[in-house]
Length: 317
View 1 (cartoon, rainbow, N blue to C red):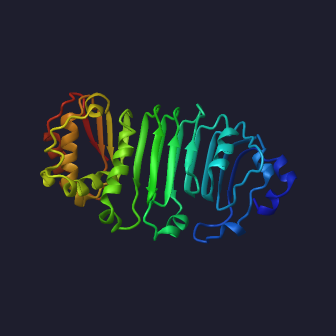
View 2 (tube, rainbow, N blue to C red):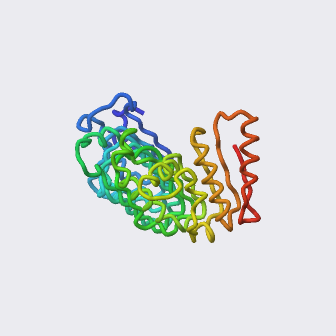
View 3 (cartoon, rainbow, N blue to C red):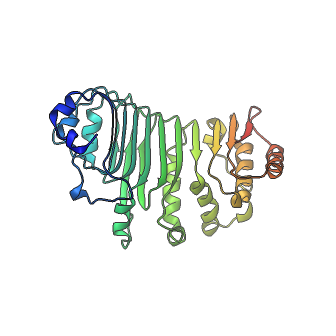
């Protein structure tokens, strides 16, 4: 649909169901001042069940009335807490919310009991790099979603100080993200990275299904030797401390996007989990581009590790 058709009222009188709007490609960046502004009439059309729009200006002046909306995806858009508050308040039956390449939000407060899944994918780089000479974190993002059962945080969030203030109902969580600007960023301020990683994981100790990406797993193995006196080569297997979340709650583990050059860390981490996760049911490990002979050897090694859970199954895909 053209932007001219969208601007007219008759066009909206027949719009029902799904609406996908992409006004420019991501490669053809347009400044916020010259982007197409979504008409106010769009925000009061209560017939939509699915909306997806990107690379435009989202600025409702009044209330939002999306009474039937169940799926919403917004990308490459500057938002703010007030706009998101209006959108969430006007979408009472919203079940799936995705924000990608977004910026401007500091507090995402979701009280809607119908929301089943929240996906946050990438802070928009155009905004993140504007303040790269500053010493403090560039952004703050606080998430309050006490009724949310599923959360995914994906991609690069730069130096975003991310807080999971209340996610007490989470059952499934995926953290396949990183909080770095470049390869040197980890070395420059590893204590900051350690604190934000620890804080995120501490907020998820109650989650039944937790998926961690490469950065979080690599990060702990990389920086801990610099801060503590211990056997860095065998950090995980040398741990004597027990963790309540491992012993009583952890049932499913998925290791995805792992680089094979870090297999030593992976071996020790898997051994640590199998030894301590007493109610573990399933461990899924995804290793890309590995020859069958080496995969067989790896599987044999993993199967040789002692398990505290008699029901634990190791799977490769």
